[in-house]
Length: 408
Image (spheres, rainbow, N blue to C red):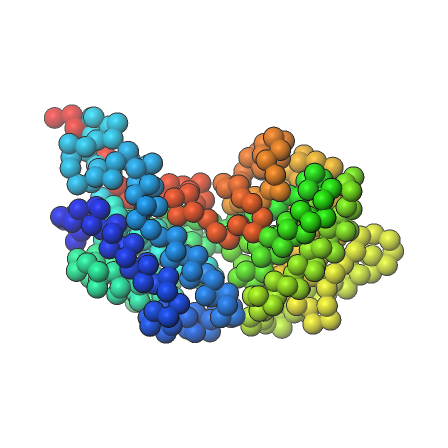
């Protein structure tokens, strides 16, 4: 029996929501202590870390948690009362059991959301924390809200494959974030029959339609949103803007929009200052800027950047070149329509998590869906997914329960 087995789901949800509300306060002492540690670990500036913590904890509310549970299981009380079967009269629902969540290096608090839903499913949860101990500090707050969390939710730091790492064969489910080879290695250490919930490497894209480019004010608003999507978390993570498509033959040219985007980036850099960068990233951005400037001198495209290589916007990037995947750096691909964008993504094997669209034109939506995007978003909201939304195309809580056949 799990530590939360006898605790009503609504009581679990309320405790999680109350703890998250405390953590949404920038002056909450445990959050104050952990913020600088996160900034030191990631290299992100403190305003970026504060933004990430706000987005994470403000989204974890009782209403959002309950809406997700109802949407996936049919009833909030499904794990409390076997008589409530949510459209499954032939089966009971029960926690999958013990769950291990292995967080990624970059995304701040990425392990907290799956851990929260595993706890809502009444599972016992162990999280591989990062050196900043964010998850452990949040779990301490959970235990203050509801005593059973002290046993149900644990977080530790360990090295992959080290003697301090837990035995993955002891878990009924493992959630992991990381590169595909990392996920394969983790899955190979699990016992047969256990559930593996892997979130591999993905990217996000944006598409600016010509209708928006008929109005300079509207285009500038899109540019500001796209700039925020690019600069947050130094363009790391699956929800950062990595490639931007802009339609030709509009009142504003692709180069005009590039200039608006570069101006918006200058503003975004003030709101979210640049964090720590290694010499390799600076050199790579400088090289990309110089190559693009040489090409522009020959009449092909344009580049907006500064001498410090703080950012770079390459306008009319050749479709033969893949996305740069560098901090605060992006290539704008000029297209005639969504089919061109789809061809580019397929040619370079870009797996999409999210697609930001400037409007709901039918062919844009259809193209984004065909490109494999898991989520469609407005510009400026790529980095703000709903807790109730699927991540990586997977449900939030359904994978943490098991259905027991009622045939007796």
